[in-house]
Image (cartoon, rainbow, N blue to C red):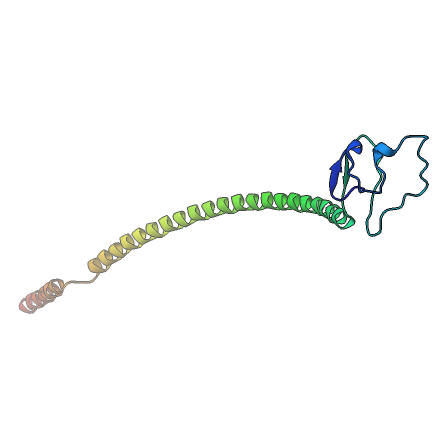
Length: 158
């Protein structure tokens, strides 16, 4: 009888009293048609020199399920690795786009500062033009006195 789980060699199979061990089997001498296990016990008769591993059906089905799930997990891991690689590429592209936008912002700021300087120069130029075009109070007084003087001269001459 081999209890599960058990790793054994055929020469070292543990036996239960009243059962047959591999040492009891001799070709041609033993005529066993249908072995009978004691009530409530399952047993396996192994005739090999290689190690034998036995598991309960429940444990075996769990192992098979885990092996099948391992294939699915491997596929999922591969998919996640591929997705991760794509995301890393996107991150690199976004960093490059961010860098370009920062450069554009800097250029825009320089342009704004340049326009501010240009507007300041234009303002000063327009102020000088306006100042040069409007007559001053002394200019008006001088023109009035000049006109009065010419009028007096013309009056004296006549």
